[in-house]
Length: 465
Image (cartoon, rainbow, N blue to C red; front, side):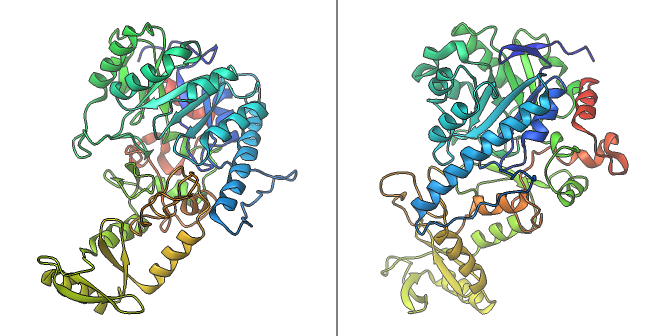
């Protein structure tokens, strides 16, 4: 493999190797600081990041607010303190090497407020901000105000065109790079649009070449593209290097840094990564954000799949084939199903799935009483972690609501990600991962359960393997 050429990112020449930011608390100050200290770009997650006391003990996120809005404000305060704390940890560990970036989701709660407060409270510590999960038009203006480089995460040239024309053309000097995240291969939330088939992945090179042509039209020939999603060995990406159709390029690693000494995930989680097989990561649409996302197939995802399968359409009055009365709820109020669906619903009830929960799509799902109680409790205890949540119907507007019925087919993403990132059971929580995660088991580098330090991993990546 040809040697990697240094690249200027966020105002400094660094290795073109970027740590992908993973929330909640999965990319933290220690992991990102170590990556930067190794000469690349370390990225900590600014999504509800951890705060620790003077003795290094985790300060738990305990909510005292009686309403969603009160808990939402508590979460915002937690998020600001946590992100500033992790930025300072990363900066100290980096020791002046590499660059430190913060990753945020544009659709997370109060993204603009949090970003402004963090950049104000950590001046000179954060060099760049990566941002995806939505269309972050205002990220350019905010970062420019603090003289911090911005890195939009997009999955198509079409998305970048919209961002550029609406906002970015006025803030070109602080555009650090454009992160192209492959929507079929990346872990976590993905940028698949309604025009793209989740079951028919497209190769990234033509899509990146289209993005580069567009960027060249805008005079951005020297602005790098960061290839993200599906990157494991650089030897597999040789056709991207010194390719005029790609231009200056860096590579982002999201999954491989999970299995390092500095990675804060639990040892159980790390061991599980070493057992995955090809196909064990599922691209699904259960997330309360409404986005597609990729996670390890486990009992948590299986339950969501089965929950949605136990679903029938209903009407509150007899309409067409929906003419069979069926009692639901403690008061046995009648809804109307088709004859076929009524027989199926009765079979589910007989099997113990006795609770029928209504969805925003005029359907019923059937769950056990224990699952129904958990769903309702999670919806009631919502702390407003997203700008809009399908599961709880929270929205950060004057009404505090999306105006739609809460969707019991989804889940509380804040609850499960906080749980798994702080030692929770990897089988009963959401475990985000890229689709290459199965390669831990096949890569000889990880033989006999070997877990490298970040510095060792960065050195390994530079060999091409």
